[in-house]
Image 1: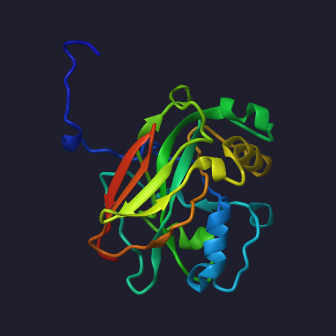
Image 2: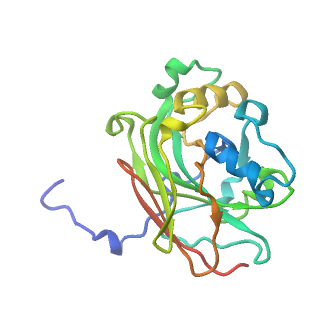
Amino acid sequence: MSKSSTRHALRDTRLDAPVANPGKIIGAPINYKAHIEEANADSQINNGTTYTNIDAFGLFLKAGSSLIGPSDRFTPRFGDRRTDHEVELAVVIGKEARSIRKEDALSHVLGFTVGLDMTIRGKEFPTFRKSPDTHCVLGPWLVTPDEIPSADALDPRLSVNGIERQRSNTRFLIYGVARLIEYASSFYTLHPGDVIMTGTPEGVGPVFPGDRIDARIASIGDLSIEVGMPR
């Protein structure tokens, strides 16, 4: 940094999502075994569906208009429906990828960030329930692959109002990061700026107006956001 550069305190800086306008936000609905087990045990999550493996359920898309950054506020869409937090490692694509091999997948990655896949529980398809405004949170910034020794050895954590709810490691992903990119690229052409949410571990749960969500992945950063009133 130049000696003449202006420094700004992080607390006084607005942080938008590190990707401005992704063409696609791709989700992996059941990519941790322990989350599959908790989903099958909770009728509000499964709504009569028995989850088996990501092979059987595939991927889903979240609307780009659902995206916000850590300086925004998460706003539940329906006050009378359960809305859950889901912390995830998010991968941002940097180079076009179409039907690539797992061995080449990481060369198509621009960087990594922390993601919150906020989810309304119900019978509708995941694409519908996970796509209202503010239901995709990314931040606090983008970390390039050279700063991450292994994307399959990261520790996502999440707490609500200071109480930890989720803690795991990406080594427990059913489809690791490279395999997930390979899988996604077999269905979609991945373009620079596209985001892949790699899936959430166990510990998902509801949030309510006034709650504070703190999500963290070591080597990437801390993402904190407030839950506002439904609208």
